[in-house]
Image (cartoon, rainbow, N blue to C red; front, top):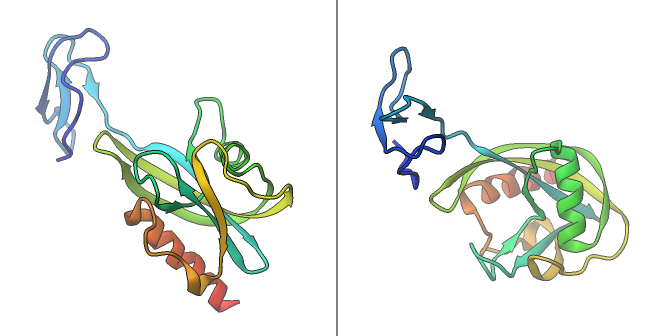
Length: 173
């Protein structure tokens, strides 16, 4: 069972308790007063595998978590965005690049600190305008060949799997 940073109901403010609601298959946090169930669903994120001349663009994070570690451009979806809109916005905000999405790499579950489980949607992309530069959440950007990928990759439980999947795709081509 996942721990939860939530102690009180977001609807009425009363204490949340763990119990298994009738007909449910797992314990959930339920409000003692209003009986609402607090579902802990993954927060959707979108990221990009931006490739130019067979090399992958990574950025060095300048913020926590994982400040100083390498990461793929991407981030949390806004409430009114599609995954495609999210990844285009995040790439622009973090690197200054305009990209064209060329495919879908896959979906990966991870966590963002103790409070969030994330569903990471990774797209394949190629740059169409601009030169990459570190912007809002990056201190450095750099292109890496598949055999040069750094060891200190942020969010290793999903990023390492996604990077291995990408490198495997490149090797099959």
